[in-house]
Image (cartoon, rainbow, N blue to C red; front, side, top):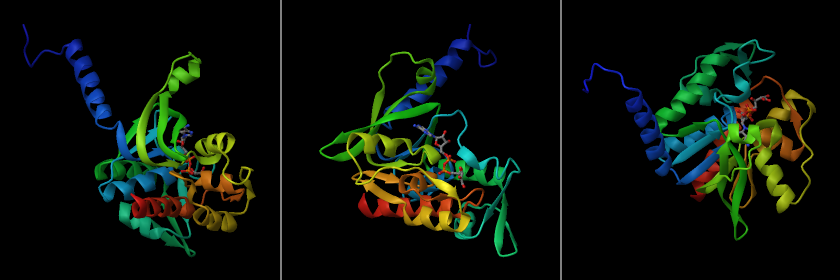
Length: 254
Ligand code: 48F
C-alpha cells in the first residue's frame, strides 16, 4: 500500500540521494570552483553567478559563512569603511556611523549565502578541497573529498571537478595557494599574514587579490596571507571588495 499520506523512509532516502547525485553530475565540469564559503568566496560566487557562470563553492564545514558570523570577538556586528555598494547589491541593511558602515554579521552572512544561491551558485558543504588539478601549467579543477573522510584519515581516494578557474578563498590558511607554491612555485615564498594593521590590511587585501598562478585566483584573507600583508580584524570592506574584484577578473577571462 502506498499513499501520499504515508511517510516512507525509503522514499526519503531516494529523494535525497537522487537529487544530490543529479545536481553533482550536472556540476562535474564548471566555470568557477570557489574554495571556501567565507565572505570573500561568497561575494565572488554572487557576482559570477549573477553573470550566468556555473559556480560551485566548496566548504569544508557544515555551515557556510566562514569567519563573518561572529563579527568581532563574537559581537555579531561588522564594520566597513569601503564596499558599501556590495551591501547594496546584496540587500544587506547598514547604518552610517562616524564615517563607517555598520551591519549585523548574521544578517550579512546569511544574505550573502542566500543571494549567491538565488543567483544560481551551488554551495557544497562538508566537502574539503584537498588538492587541485594542474594540466599544462594551468590549474583546471579541484580535487575533493568528504571532510569526514579526511577527519578519520581513512585512505580513500578523492574525486575531481573540472573548472575554468579556481578561487582560493580559504582565509588565513590560503590552503590551495600553499599547495601550488609547494609543488610548482609562485615566484615567492608564502609568508602568511602579518600583525594587525586595519587600514593597510584592507588596502592590501584588494590590491593583492588576483591570479597568482595560471587558473588560480586568490581572494580575501588568503590574498593577505599569500602576500604577507597585515591582518585587519573585523573590518570587512576589503574582504567583500576582494571577492568582487576576483569575480570581475575572471569574467574578463572566461
Ligand atoms: O576564514 P574565512 O571567513 O575567509 P575570508 O572569506 O574572510 C576572512 C574573514 O572572515 C575574517 C577576517 C576579516 O578580517 O580576517 O577572518 O577570507 O572563510 C574561509 C572558509 O574556507 C573554508 C573554511 O572552513 C572557511 O569557511 N575552507 C578552508 N580550507 C578549505 C575550506 C578547504 N581546503 N576546502 C574547503 N573549504
